[in-house]
Image (cartoon, rainbow, N blue to C red; front, top):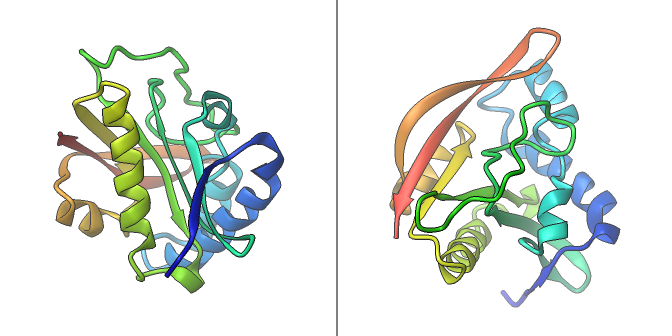
Length: 177
């Protein structure tokens, strides 16, 4: 299926937020409660504008429709968007640190067609081109099996605070290139 990949920009943020919400509500409901999803959409499942500023956030489009988005980061923040309280925006050293794979999102209508795998590969390739030899992510519970098949290994289960005592589980995963 032909689609184009391009760097996201600040003007894309409203459409990206809609894409993220559709993906989370459509694809994460089996792993997280409605309260977790609602809280996550206000905190961690939001656009991280630092990625658009860094030029490391991308969009997959077909005929102007956003099918998915993804990003990678050379900053210390593992997961979460602009509204998440836990952020570390210091740049990392590719010789010492692992690049962060961030925000692999696919619209539910385009799920399970290989787009997510292509987006992941593009993010990995971009991080490797920037000199990183290790990759790390905070994977949702539904994403863990996908990432295991792509060479990542689970190293830690994490409880991410959202809001008002609501938390969600993610799995920190790593891969050596």
